[in-house]
Length: 339
Image 1 (cartoon, rainbow, N blue to C red):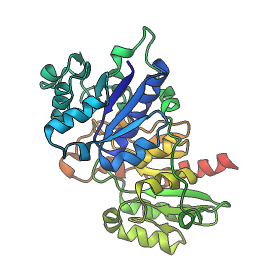
Image 2 (image 1 turned 180 degrees about the vertical axis):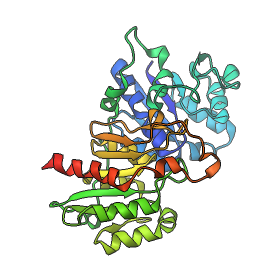
Image 3 (image 1 turned 135 degrees about the horizontal axis):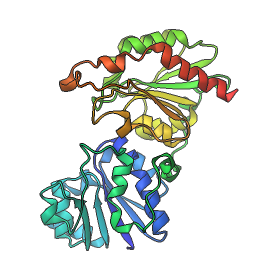
């Protein structure tokens, strides 16, 4: 296989946990060319991976007339496509473009007519981590040896190609204190720790030791305006709505640690080898066994219980039962490990 296309057009965290698949493919097929089909807003993440040879923007591609879409795909000389995030339109396009090997899952009915290699894979009820599930789509390329163990998958990120942090942001980082990023929101992708929890946490982290940096979109900043004010009052920095994704990646690379619920920046920090703490609800399929960050300094806090009380957008009592004191203990241990 000379050219392999990875199709994953959903969000940042999903894309991040697909990157180890690319590293594994490059290990198995060192000379292969990897094209990543992604949404426009995740391009900065994809381009940061050293295993990506080319990026295909789905938002732009789908605007073309159908015959031009097919021609464009054919010009890429793709030998195989892995539908990691299944989309009917993309599956149809790859079949019309006559991509020789089209890999999908048996659970998608339209894959039975658009793919010629079906993998028995059901994500919803699987006990596997998302990164492990992504690897299963590459079974046609697998040798007799097993896939890498979950605890080793962080070695396959290849997350090394990011931009230099602009000076006005690098000036925020303090060389004498622990630079801790708080990313409290997740754009609704998972249950979130309460704003009250974060505000209490601030009082437990001495300002002489911790430089607090708050990140998120402008809309997210408005949802936690009280936390933004608390961070500013304690001499920290509220950067909500002020960074591009490229700048956020570079900022995380320059910081010392990151705290968040289940969201993309959590996985970026883990891939960069930063101290990373994820706060998770135990509800399936959003629990840490499926979505925990993968990294040498990554950890999670979650209650070991079965609970579905927060389904339907209701507040999650399980994640909010994690105390600020528990979180502070982890963050303090990070600082101690660096001294």
